[in-house]
Amino acid sequence: MSEETSSAKYEIMVLLVPDLGEKGTEDSLNEVRDLIKENGGEIYHEDIWGVRDLAYVIRKQERGYYAVFNFEMDPLKLHELNQPLTLQNEVLRYLVTKTAHNYELKSLEEYEEEAKKEEEELEKKKQEKEAAKDAPRKVVKKEVKKEAPKKEEPKKVVKKEAPKKEEKAEEVEEKVVEEAPKEVTKEDAKEAAKKLDEVDEKLKSIIDDPDISL
Picture 1 (cartoon, rainbow, N blue to C red):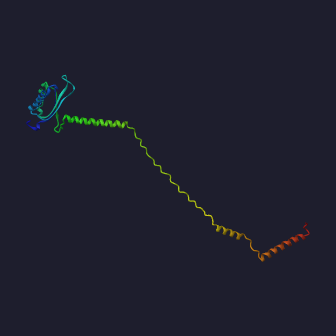
Picture 2: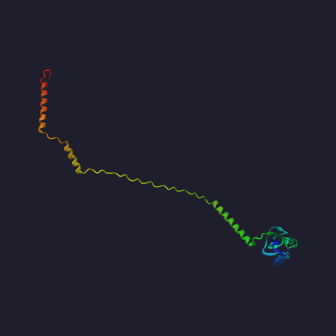
Picture 3: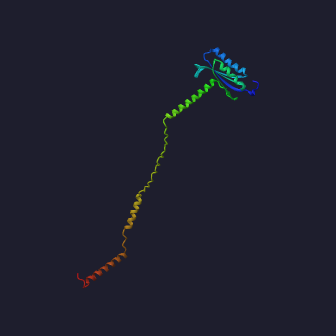
């Protein structure tokens, strides 16, 4: 790379034939490394995935050996990789993508760990949702506190005390005194005798009256 400003960051995924063996696989990977370096590229990260199942059959192969290389290269030199990689028989497929300068590098293990955590979180949320759905609904009853009836204070009964015997005796004495006849004086006797004489005279005049027949 003559000028850093003229380079860009790329990522290439290479898919090799799975039955090359350890040495044959390493030789094929070295050819890819050398091709990048020969065209002014600089590899700064590698992530070897190993043999994995393919999404679909490629050249009668159901499995492939995966390897990922991150490198910097002049964009004008990028096309120099296409022909050699296409002619290399050990290479089933390859894919080159441009990455940003702040691209965060992650290994396959890190991607798998993140995917596993996300799957666990989704499963947990699913179980919580199902548990909440199956759980019986709780009916919250509002307790109404009934106030105890107030105790009525007993009415005060004022007992009238019976008069004492002495008081009764005094009342009887007073009544007796009131009802007792007055003493007859001499003047009263004279007055009564006078009234009797007047009555006698009237009777006598009636008897002596010649017009009255008895």
